Length: 140
Image 1 (cartoon, rainbow, N blue to C red):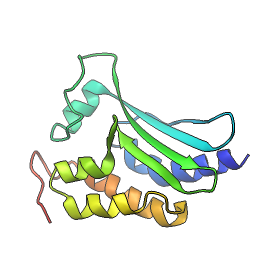
Image 2 (image 1 turned 30 degrees about the vertical axis):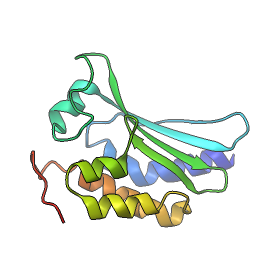
Image 3 (image 1 turned 180 degrees about the horizontal axis):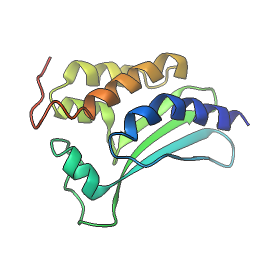
């Protein structure tokens, strides 16, 4: 039951950001020991690549059928375990597009309670999926 609550909390905070960015509604699951809850948002690779060509995950797979996954893991104690975008941390993705300060801030919330980490994650995802930055970002 606690896993469901952790998952719903993450979904409530992040779905309004990632679904408009081209991702499908999430899949939720937890491991057999209820140690980690995993939330996965999947974007069709072609849609993701068209919307977010500046990101390193774009155009990395064959066209059609493949997904780019945003994976969030939350530990049973309610702390953020990881946030990856197609096997690259979102913090590294932010740094890749010149948002070094934001990437560093996001890296610091790993291991922090969801109440502290989710606002930072939400803000980071808004930045990384922003369509108004074009192919170049303005580094801070």
